[in-house]
Image (cartoon, rainbow, N blue to C red; front, side, top):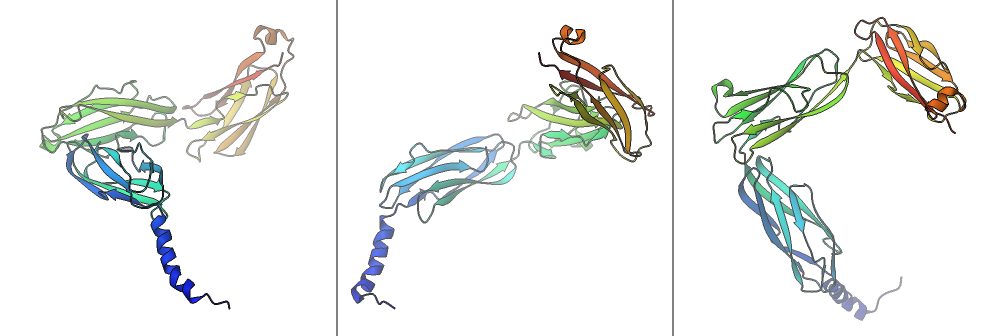
Length: 336
């Protein structure tokens, strides 16, 4: 084994210390902050001093928060030895309640603190408490004709709460009812949203706007979503063969909640060139309509009249009173 000279062994720690001293080093003042008590929907800003206490050039690559409620701004991202700059931070308490902790992540070329975290703490006093907290209502998947109701409770700790809303959602899809003084408590109100039996199959999104007597929250928009299915539904619900030279497509007729005593009685399509075959693949659960065929000629009068865009409908007849007929649009295009 080769031995280092004694002088080298003596100088090695000195060189290591000198090397460390020459590196860039980030320092934050303060290293964290407690904003104390805030109300909901209140904003506050503060500054953090960022200093390069090393000898090298400090490059700050990224400054970001873990939440949109906290916005850090740092205009100077390259600091020479001894230089400082201010990081401005804006915090919005939004609809938080209780103790809130947020982090700001700072990435730099500091060899020892390449990823540094700055913690913000605040105690947010609720002016209006929602239960559930999310300002949205989601109905579970249901069958056409079913009725369901969802509720959100509201509590205003510091005043007698008054909520107001119309009798229906913005698009008129859902029923809406507001009750104040719930259980004899003037601080509590309730919103009831009803998914009616007449809501058509498909995905639906709507909104109800509430007005309140809470100064910080004069209006609240509640998002409403629901998905309604028929007892039987087609997949896909639209068939487009585009420019395909031949047709080959299965349309699956399936029960939303199998097993279901259903049967496809017959099918028809108003496009003679589209042939079909009914195949019961899984009894009481799934039947396939196999579509085959080929496009008509581009000189066919139908093709000329429609400029090569052919459209029609596949009709599937079942033994269910709730879904006697299922209609699936069918189309294709012909190259000129």
